Image (cartoon, rainbow, N blue to C red; front, side, top):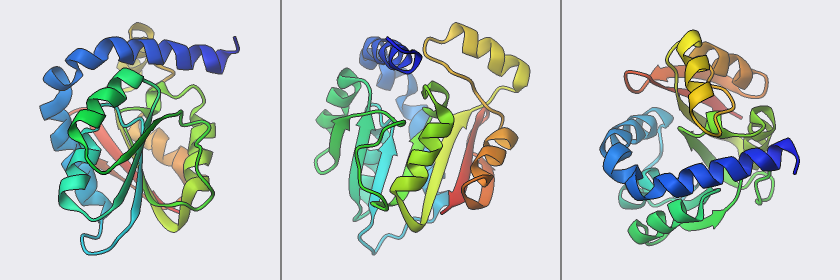
Length: 200
């Protein structure tokens, strides 16, 4: 098994095991972050758009979008058990197993792509960034939301969390995004949570 497949397997097991307690422990906190991220991206409410949530987990972001927009919604995740939780709360979103490094969608398919609290679990972050760029329409927007505890504590957290391939500071995420995206901006969305927004 190559390194990328091994990391996918590790993350699948980690989130399968976490699925039963994910919403009770993280749901309320995450919903606040999701709402702030949506507000920063400037999502139109009176227009049909296509949105992809990569690493959608139990579907909390998609649940907000399903209630409050007319968007056509898609979500992918490595964990079938997390997706099962998502299916129980969503009525219209298209959900399937998948990974960020190999998105099974055509070029220029989406108006918006979200990645929330998942970037540090991608087996190849640069490859994932290219995939986000590929599936976005021209003028589309990417919002990456992730934790950051500062460089030293990011490294400590990476060592103790299964499947963690590296947390970047908001500055470093911005530098990575600027290689592909324009108008990159960073927002604080929580005490240790930041959103990085870029336009294709």
